[in-house]
Image (tube, rainbow, N blue to C red; front, side, top):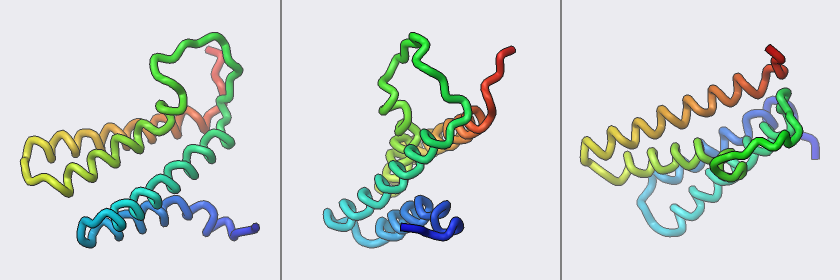
Length: 124
């Protein structure tokens, strides 16, 4: 299947927007399930694209990670989902501040990853 580049590149963000649109309605289980499916589809699409487009690919050099790589890849998206959901369901200022902090951390991690993965490997 061939999609125009404009549609192909923006499709995960459309999934995120549609997920947010569903969450603006009442909180029922079918709507929450549908929103989580759209959010998951956007996350999976972005992570798989990032894995295929990496310029800093390295062979397994015996580097031990503290957390599994699969969890590491999805961690910013988990942070943002928890942050958004917490902001939506609570009115407590402390919880909302913690949720906002999670959102900032998620954006920071995604921006740093993008910068590191789109540059070639540096030897020095």
